[in-house]
Length: 179
Image (spheres, rainbow, N blue to C red):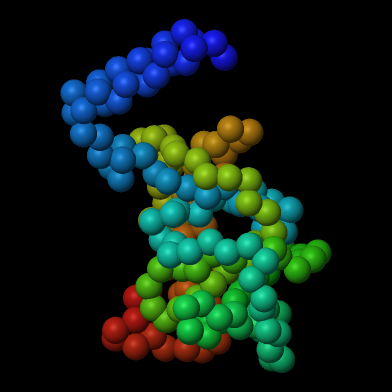
């Protein structure tokens, strides 16, 4: 880039920066849904970022013996031992390989869900999302559809996933635990 091109580019960036202060503040949480486009068991899904407190690739998971095929084991997060469940297994899909990614669900008790691929972060206008407030049979963890490039994706509701895990394990949530 020539010095003139650099100067023009800087002037354009300054103008854009200054103009951003003249525009009304945007309410991202209201206008847009922030989603993670993921794949579990080879199928596309979306997760709401507002329901997650962390995303971790290649986190070691210590396997645990037990009757729950969906329970992969436990992982450490900030000094806490957190159960890790396979999202594909919770959704009823075959689990071809060990998932690479872990999403830590917000709320209590701690819960991490493992999935195979992260396709990326997307912002979708909130008005474009087809909402579904409750699963069809009460144990379904899918709540709505999000239009994302390449097609619509079912939205995995992390609080509903926690409730499904509680149902699998027979755990009765404490009054202080979120559903």
